[in-house]
Length: 198
Image (cartoon, rainbow, N blue to C red; front, side, top):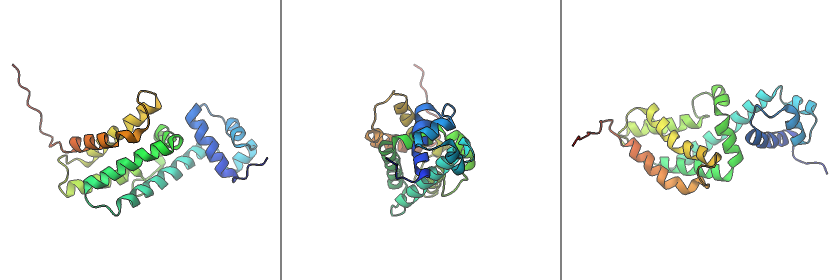
């Protein structure tokens, strides 16, 4: 029976699954064509190379998620509710779309150089939120690049641990703990802790 989904969507679905299961390097064009139920030549009519397919998949989904995060924050006011909403939505996305989330996480170093800063980039969306929080006096930490990196580490390292079986899913069960950890880290004034020697 013929698969009625448009060819490009079948290619995307097959590619996401194979790239996450086998890795991008280990997945061949033949693997992709077979998984999508098409001839290799048909795949080449849509993408000039496997790298082009990876780049398109990454940019398309990464950009859509950035726009979603921007819209999610729009009705909220203040740094804390916006950060909580952002973390909650990223963790829901992880739990609801684990294959897509893993793809974006695992190929980010290959895909990010093609994504400009701005509204199309989830990291830029977070960075702008942090900058506004600093401007409004809601954060003790005053370096927006460092604060953004710290939040990303607190969010993405648990997701990576789930991928490698070191932490049990769902990720969303840690939303409140990680949100609290981010707020504690960002409240830092940068003053060194005094150490008392007995």
